[in-house]
Length: 427
Image 1 (tube, rainbow, N blue to C red):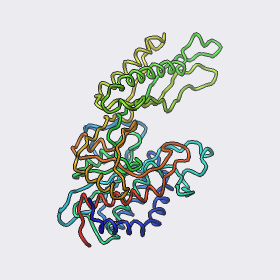
Image 2: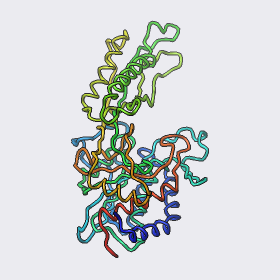
Image 3: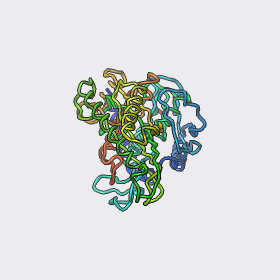
Image 4: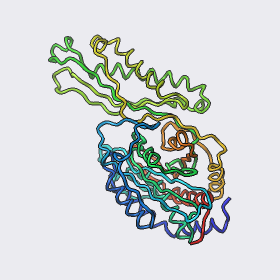
């Protein structure tokens, strides 16, 4: 439990810094930090961290060997020489408390047609206590929460009594390789907190995820004699239908799963991008579909991949052309294990206690049908991974928005957690 006088100091500091935090978040949202274009955003963050007197490690994913590590995801069509990561080390002269990693991602998903937004996606607007913009909710508000939680300690005349690593990564939305790179680079702590927009609850479990590309061939002929050729786009529909059937079978199994039994259809399948064909009057000779499918926590990645391969092969047998020209399945992104945070860890107990003080109610837990980077810490490195952050609406949607009141409260909660977990020293 945080000392009430200390909590009052932190509350006053968060209040004093609030206008600056909102402006900082607006500036962060203005960066269109889409995949492969995160560099300017990360460079600005690196300068912000350096201005705070923190030791900054700026590097790209091309500089880190990690394809041999568990959790690594293969990539295509991506230049890792442009994938900038930032880690700031805030070191204590003596390790009197427990060390901590604070990690957030700055990559955002595409905004889609701009005319379908109420406000421009990268020109953040504040209305009625909400900040609108791509990434405002997922998860740049969380990045501001962890940075300004640290600022609150400083403004209160305090510093952590153990080392803290403040990390901003990329690739969270597609591979997780940004988070993995920090571990490959050697950063470790006694716990990690990732302020994804959970609405002030902690993530107890989440599904795993596979990304893959279906590559389908066809036989091009004039559409006037389409029956003599093979239409790769139409063939793709049959494969997708079979993968929908696989998803239904997995969700039937989920009804007996200890973590997901209470959630309707926790595993989702999504064909997200489709390309194909060369001419409107020719049967298309090629089609590619980029897909995402979930897997239940506890399922081995190799087994999940085999189920996808079997489903695709089964569908191909019913296509005269594909039966002899099998489609390819290319793993090109997330190869993410499901996650489970067992109750009772010391870090979670501390977070629950500080949350209770700040929010005035017990901290709840959620089971999620999406993924986050906490899995790397918890599953592969034995570091308690707490996914807990502010609230908002519209992740990946039009008019995505962050709730500023929720962000302010959560910033205080994270500041109190840092103070309690790491201890504090007067500066």
